[in-house]
Image (cartoon, rainbow, N blue to C red; front, side, top):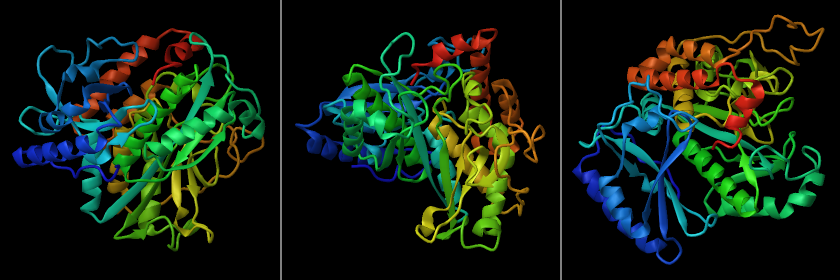
Length: 464
């Protein structure tokens, strides 16, 4: 039942409300007998998915009138408290969370549930300026007005643990190895079946490098749908893992001295239906506009990092020689580069894309896909050129860039400062969205100040 998200409009009027209510009545009748509970979600500034739940019979009313949510939610931080310094910390006001019926997913895990993303509006039907999903939808519309389309997909990595307080790997076996499947075969089968039943187009699941770590790759979609799918996949994985008596950690750093969980974002771009990342005369088939977009993304990574790696724990993951993308460099198939370019292949001409490796799953996926697309729009016609590409690991002694490869910000504070000075992102997102998000990040910085790395990791280990 999943399709493209609703088109972007600054105003949701009576005609749209009536049409949504009528559609919801049809959907509710179709789901009767298989579903009983509808969860409408959005993701706040802290990266947490928030939810309002109604019985199936309440879906038409929710679709027409929305579900009430206070604006203060975006002032919440990861420990569940409210940032008193946030401009959103006030008791008055209300928003309406409206389910997007085009992106509804009926689940088998947990059984009887329906998950649907929502957009937030003011009482008069105007879009809320801090609605991250509406920001992403607005960027899709802005790109289309210039003939540009994007397709994106998140890689979802997670580790499976047995201990609720600490982390005891639930499965043995080597990374990428069949040996890990020996003890996890039923679990992996159930994850795959539940994702497929929910409408997620799974391309592969495999054991990852870390202890009891897995990764699932899904098909590329439009940027808003890619973010919807990220939320859906994490929820379904969490539900299946809980049914097995285990816990799934999507945290960027689960324990010390090992890899963490990434949330790498793949993106491709077309203009008027033609790929901008292949078929051109530039390096690796890049077109002039395609190279300008990739150059723009590379240049904007310090600012994007505040959105894509938005927790103090993110910077415990961003270490050299772990394929985390800590260097502000690009290269064809270079997994140490923050921007890994994947060239079109004769076996798969449509595969050309860029992988932004420095991001993780503590990010709000809507804010991230919208921000990446905003930079692509701003960069497409600037005729920017990429620097020399880099191969190999600059951290290895003897590498031509050893000791002098440009590094991305080493702390969340540095990244937030870069975000606040990004004219492109402020113009696209607006002052209110940027300033309130930056405030939430500063609250996280203060929360972690002076704490040992182990405590920072422990506090974020089970956040979803």
